[in-house]
Image (cartoon, rainbow, N blue to C red; front, side):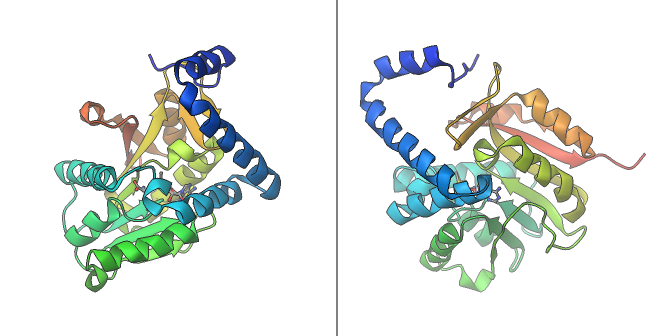
Length: 255
Ligand SMILES: C[S@@+](CC[C@H](N)C(=O)[O-])C[C@H]1O[C@@H](n2cnc3c(N)ncnc32)[C@H](O)[C@@H]1O
């Protein structure tokens, strides 16, 4: 069972076992407090985190601490989605596309114009443009759009076959996830699916600073159900070398 990372006992045990992580954690704590005081809401806060991290290293900002890992995590997402239904003719929306760690593979595979990436961070979207240039993907005309929220109001009804969000809800409070569930169904075509990863806990739900959020599977399945989705826990994803779990949502057919 994955243990709660916010309990004091857990934190102290972890600190004793990992003394080299104490100073970096205190630095994160100081930054968290500073950004929290300077921003109004979670999105503003997380955009500030991304600005600071992207300035240092765009690949580190999306969670990969070296280029080999950046390529491998992108490849893992891509291969999995192709094995689970993605076809070149699909229209795809990637929520929280970052600097296109997986997006550069999706763009190369999908028909021209069929990839749509959105992100709350303008800084990481600039880095995404660099990825497009580096990988020679300009002719594929990918769409990259900064967003303020996940209401998706500027996107058309019944448009996307696939929606993908990797390592986004692991950084999102429940109200952000709920906003997404409340609106994403509108832009999905009949038969479309929405895959997302999340940090799973089997114990108490909790967060580490404002950056990392841990949910029970049942919480997300029940929330998705309230917005007309059926959820499937992707068991075979658990076998891959990645710490997060994955759910697939499909729209429940009208009764
Ligand atoms: C850990 S990175 C992962 C990026 C990409 N999915 C990947 O796998 O490389 C999380 C990304 O989600 C974005 N993000 C976080 N919350 C978001 C939200 N509510 N709406 C859209 N993007 C969000 C961040 O700016 C960041 O680029």
